[in-house]
Image (cartoon, rainbow, N blue to C red; front, side, top):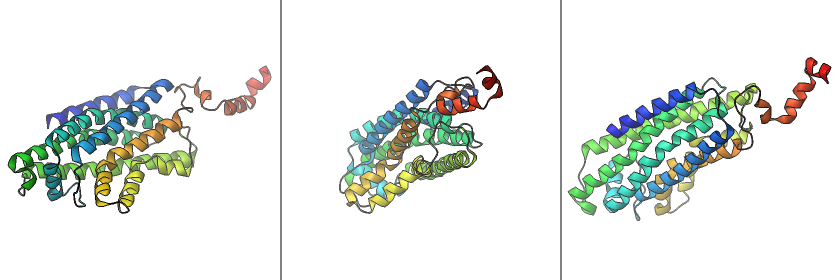
Amino acid sequence: FFFFLKNINKSFVLFFLMLLSNSISSSVINAFGVIAIFASIIATVGDIFLQYSPDLPRGSPDNWDFISLMVSRNPLDHQVIGTYLGIYSIPFYFFGVLNIYYGIKNTSFSIFFAFISFLSTSINSVYHSQIVGAGICVQLEGGPNYSGDCPTTATLLQVQFIIATLLTIGQALFLLISLIQIYKNGIQTTFPMNIPFIIMCNPVTYIILFFLLSFTLTTNMSNLLMMVSANLAYVFLFSVSTVSQWNNIYINDDDDQHDLNPDQHQHDLDLDPDFVVKK
């Protein structure tokens, strides 16, 4: 609970720091993206340690029977390792959110995307501590033969799963609306604006893809894919955002925005009467 409050507090601080920032250098934006990519990879590995157990039936992350079976078969030391990898890497998703935000910041809904993303990051980092809590409860009560319940832990996991799902949908929706707004209105951005990019720059795209792919895999591999799907989706999202902006980023200053497209800048100068006279 206190870990959750600390992360929520951190999200508000970073959110308002973002609002106060009027300019940012290209190297900082690039660094934000790289940090987020590595953080999401570490969190994905943490998911494997935390949740993966061989020979599990197909299950759902909001189903207590499946969770209790999963954590009862998974060694507790693996769950602890996965917990620490998750709770210390997922907060660095804040940097990935900032990387994406500077690509859509000139749109009407960029602020909503950033705020919901910060809340989603905070809640998802707490999920790891709840899973290990379930593991401790189950293994202390009966280990692999456990067939009871941990009402508080089960409820927390189900509530967290519902909230995280709604926030992820909200995050994806505001990002999609922002990208469509840029595409339709020709708003200046560091993102390459085309339909394939709009589809690829969205976490829900990858989650849906992983879900469909899971039906073609064995039960063991399907469970593994679904357990890492959320964080793995962010590996792809942050990679797409960072790579697509790498050579397109400009300093958010009127004197330096020609760096975004030098040819367009020269064309604009040629149409400027004052420049033509001087020329």
